[in-house]
Length: 187
Image 1 (cartoon, rainbow, N blue to C red):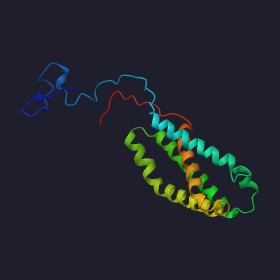
Image 2 (image 1 turned 180 degrees about the horizontal axis):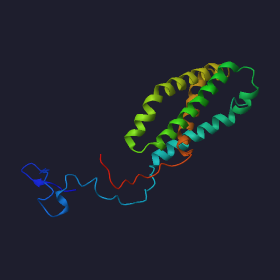
Image 3 (image 1 turned 45 degrees about the horizontal axis):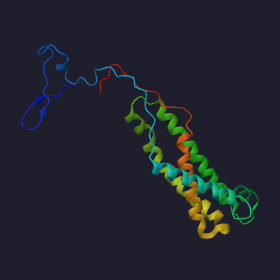
Image 4 (image 1 turned 90 degrees about the horizontal axis):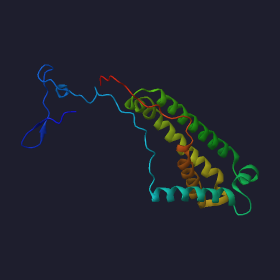
């Protein structure tokens, strides 16, 4: 892309006609007309603080699941404890399942989109209020169902499990986005 014509305050971009100059600088905007070079995308580099935070969420969630109520683990409690209110627990699980289905569906829609701005227009803006409302409802139902066992500690317990799911969810990817190599772009 041409830098432009130097002026007193910086560079000013001028448009030239096609027959004015003989070099490739005379194109109106040659950024779109160049072929893209194929570079391998480098993996994201995690900072130490991010790694420590993620490990902390995972270890604390494993602690919650393994120790449960100090007598048995969380899975055994969910299956066999009579103190749990079953109907809100099952409705909360249905809400989490519906959220997971909506996430998978919107990610499939995003994979079929050609351009990045189309991904946001098609998927996230229409599903976001529904997913948020369903997630908050599920959290409240889980809190109501598990309150007889842990009392006030139900809130941090559920938040810890939620954050552990959010840390692991990006690694559960069904496929990857295909690279976009458009030779001729008109936008």
